[in-house]
Image (cartoon, rainbow, N blue to C red; front, side, top):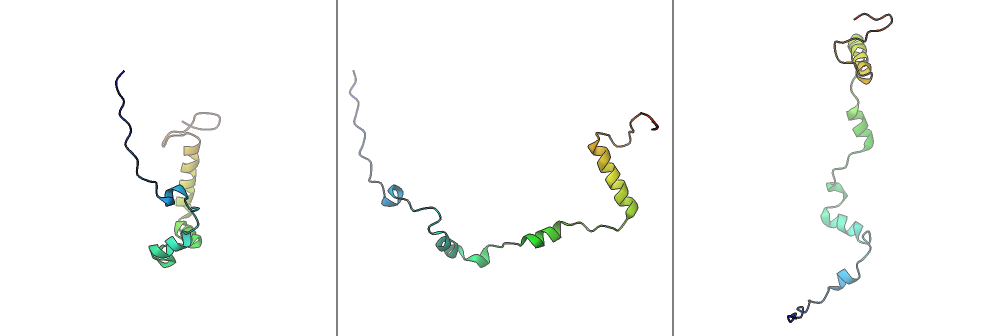
Length: 90
């Protein structure tokens, strides 16, 4: 059999790795080091909801057409085609 060389000696492991602190122990301190609460650029949920709302009530016929088109998409109908059946024209 061939001689197997011994593994080199490893450097000592730092104590922070051996005994880590809980992840949330210094959370507030890390926030302060990063610049504090003022630099987070957080937005309130109320502002976001108001921005997401689309203005409505401008054109009644346009709203009706869009909602009917959406229903047709849910039913699997393609634009311009109508289903054949009782009471419906081709």
